[in-house]
Image (cartoon, rainbow, N blue to C red; front, side):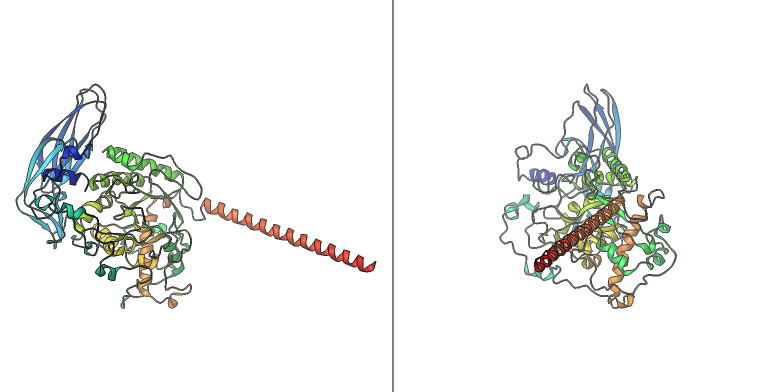
Length: 592
């Protein structure tokens, strides 16, 4: 996809590169000129580093970006691999004419793995020579070095990658579908077949049998589930949990205090806020839209707007991305906003995707690194960023119509999930917004392999997941979401399916499903963990009462109610006077 295809297709003789590509990935202009000099590789057990010296050879001060790529060994018909892949990048300081700066670029050896979804069903670092090249863009080579892997390493069993908590293996076989996937084999021999228009637009029968929406999904009950305690009086408040680990034993007695209604509200009403829970002293927080600014849809207050994500990523400058996130966090703090619906980091799969202005790049590494800095910058001010739209959200047309996206596991992991993976592992993201689309036969907002196995079990995510804007659409359902890794619904009112089903408003003894209540409890645990470690629980920010916009809306409601009452009183008096006048006239007539 993107530059990976064009570079590989040119190497295999499928295209004439100069006729097909005008601006290679990573290409850029400057008001001055630079030279770059590549040093030797420095190799440890885990990493590869290389020094690059950049010199300003022009007459104007400027900055230059440094781009390092790798070319893996490829066996015809073997694991699919692109011939050129971004490995690392950096940006110089402002260099005066004649000045030089040496940058050290480092990446993990295991970052050069490929995902073999057909055979090993694991990440594989194949034996052979890996060409490490310094380039001014994805196509223009400055210099190269070679790193050799003596024996193939398969990351399976107990041998997981160093950044994974559990070993990654196939989770998305159900999303492969009946598609002819483009292959590099024999010089892209299947190109015409793979790029032909679909012969049918119908979902295969096997996938239809797995397809679920609100009409046919049934929760799977755990017969051994024990009903959690609710409404307990343990004397704890959420503020007591600040700084404690997610799995600290103190969370259990606190969560015992939550009532069914409080948990249901916290799950149902997660739109532009996280809801309060009186039993644990949880305050309401305000969450607002981005991604290039902070805008409160209720108060009308908005921040300064910044250039869109594409422009920021085009700089290849992580410092700028960090400064952007810091600015967002600072303004959010001034606006009493704790959650930021951004950054958005889906892949530029097509130039025509409806949200490309929000998304960073066609490259997962660049997108992930830039987004990670924005997330960390915002978190310096206690603001949790909702990385979105998780995942495979590459189309806006018909996005509410149970749009199904098909892909094989290699592309899912190496391309589409890569920015999110980096943002969780390096950016320490604490909130995620899922997407509208179906991944194969499963809605992304209730896809357990995505939200539980990959996001939490593999990557170690400890925050919470909100849906995209929640208006039911026939497949969005709170119960279904929390059973499969979701936490809350982006809704501010009852949409018909954002409240957990199968519950009553009474005591726990009247609640039919212990499994449901356990999932509710875990969803609220995830929300509370993120919120208590945000700016909302910094001592100077804690606000236990209603928020200002809620006070304003309540006051407006009261004023309107008073006006209605006065109007009705006026009408009643007016009618009474008319009737009384008519009665007097009638009596006078009768007297005459």
